[in-house]
Length: 217
Image (tube, rainbow, N blue to C red):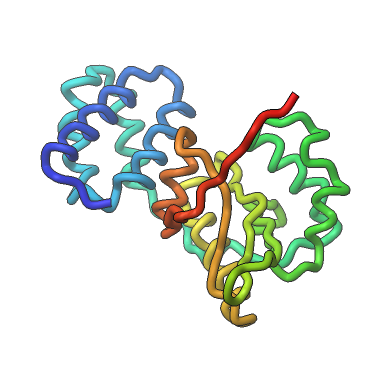
């Protein structure tokens, strides 16, 4: 996302203020990773700029040191994460991951619903050291020309965000779609949710189609 200088100054100022005012490490990490994902490629040398701005907002040495730790961390090697097809033994762990991510009741994504995605060829998990850190559940749906893959559910564990796992899952499902001569990925999201910016960052574009609804009583 390329930004003008004025836009860059505004978002850097906003980020630095939010980061410095937070007294919770996990909250600061979430603010950092979200900023990095959405604006990191649009602001040249943003870490240096934010570091300089941070000193105006954060007289607390601990906060500045936390920023330095996050800014200087090394991205995990993507090869460390194994992406494989969803399997039956994964169902319980995947259900827990999804419900934590969406703050749902455990019945919202029950095991029976997830089991329907097992073996369909378009549902994958990302694992590290035997732990499932991300999941993408998709299925083939009719499309005007060649069919499409509809992404029903897509999430990465909060502690594992910012390491390219989501990008790798999207690339994996896209590869399988292409091998079957399917050229479109589809999903629904809400512009008010932060996921909207993440999907745009991953290359998704808004459709010309309009989802309409009518409440009936």
